[in-house]
Length: 447
Image (cartoon, rainbow, N blue to C red; front, side, top):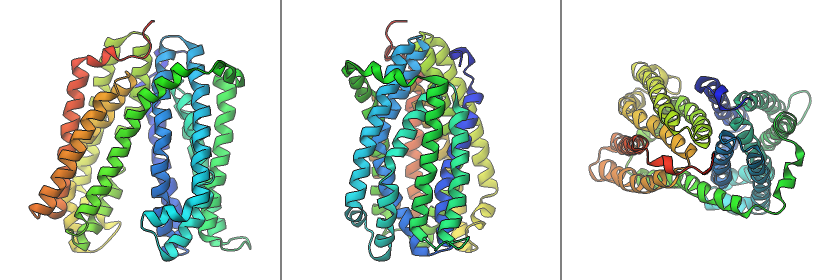
């Protein structure tokens, strides 16, 4: 890639969009095929993946920080520094991945019991987690290499790899789970083998691309003497970003447990279906946000803060336009979308009301996803985390209790609280970007 002048929002964003959508589809295929084998087996994978998703937050510490550092060093034309961060990122991801893999292999059953699994779900979940969790270090390596490749502007590579992984995983799932071509029906074990094998393939392909097109294997020599200052920078930038993700997941868990007893069965079903549908509404914002982080990082590293400022606002406007159009179409066709999952009139009626409130929620969520990504790209990581701590726990958690439980508004009260949290934080992030205070946060001080 020939530096930041070739970085364009859409050329970076659309491969990330497809990759994100396919990554979501990867888990959907596993559960769908297992549902043809055993309903409890399908549920067990969902339970096991809760543990996996929480564990992978650890990778966020290194990946989010290395993305900022690499993009800014490349923008500042400091290629060797970018390569040193790349090497350090790979090593740290591998080490943390191996530790987490060992934990999953040795303690898969106790972990699943802790999150409430029992009986057949515990048995199936332990089978899945011992294999997929045992190879989670491959996911760590893929995360590290994808970040490096993306921040060199080659976002299509990880997209193509994800496409290949989806095709391979789907084929292996079908054969191993259902026992085609004379093979035994392997159920959960088959899904776990398919997932792990597709990750092996993805890791190999990414490594070949990385060390043939972008870096040399000799970059690991840059870790001698060990770059303690770089490690400190990764911790300083990465921990707040990971903390924000962790706090979000924890707040959602608290909200779910808090409102579980005050929501009716129909409300819980409607909540699940609406969340599954609206998940695809904000993929656009996620992809534009990640592309914007790369661009802002390059521009800030090059000392072009005014260009970075304008790029952040342009990215926000484009993401907001797309998200609101998609959300508006969701409101118009809400009954048809819910009809994909159920023909229960009561559930559809409840869900239809949620879609209207969700339109406002998407305004805040889109602003959050894009502006926080831009702030991170500039190195401004503490402000978003501080706002998240206040807003998630005071407005989201506190509002959920007030509206859903105390006022008795049920599922609508829950969605109002979630929307208020997203909109409040979104406004704060936009004001922060417009204030320009992030201009003093860049990692690369000399250009």
